[in-house]
Each structure stands twice: as C-alpha cells, then as structure tokens.
Amino acid sequence: MRKHITCTVCPLSCDVVLELGKDGEILSLTGNKCKRGEVYASKEHTAPERTLTSIVRVKGGVLPVLPVRTSRPIPKDKLKEGMLEVAKVNTQAPITMGDVIVEDFLHLGVDLVATRDLETAN
Image (cartoon, rainbow, N blue to C red; front, side):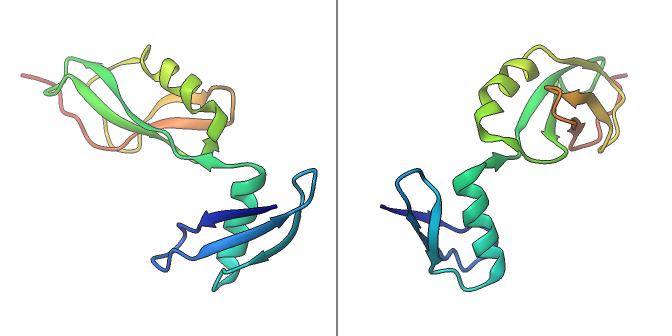
C-alpha cells in the first residue's frame, strides 16, 4: 500500500511516498529531498500533530477577543477537544504577547499563549 504525504517543512513541498506494510508500518520512504522531509512524513504517518490557533474572550480590553495558540503542536486528534476548551476561556486585559492564558492545556504539557498585546480599554 502507498501513502502520499506533501511535506510542509520547507517551500519545496516534496511529495513523499510511503510504502506501508499490512499493519501500517513504514517499509520505505521516497521523494523527500532532505532529511527533514523524511522525519516529517514519518511523524505525520505515525503521530500527526498541529498547532492549535484560535481566539478567546477578553474582559476590559480595547478589543473583545484575543488571538491565541498552543506553545507547541498537540496531537491532531485533540484539536476538536481543544477548540471546545478554548471556547470556555475568558481572560482579563491588559495582556502582553507571549503571556500564558491557560497552563498545561488539555493536560498535554503545552500552554495556550497570547499572540498579540492587548491594552485595557479607557
């Protein structure tokens, strides 16, 4: 069985082809132009991860919402659960970019952090 994965590590966007065994193990990997593509495709097949980005509500800010992201990628199968948790979050202005909004998000050892500054409303 073959599986095609487009590598997103660099602008080359290599089409990496995985030859898979009956139980999903990788037998061979071709098409990558660098070692990073090999690592990316292997990880994408075995344990895909994504950085969750969203917004949270803010009280007392010049804007009603704040953009946030996870400090590191989380398992792809946790994205829906993460979005449901983000929808419950409320924070208070002022906020500085990089501030931790939720520590140990989803108990994954990853923080939810602010991606911009947000001043207090006058």
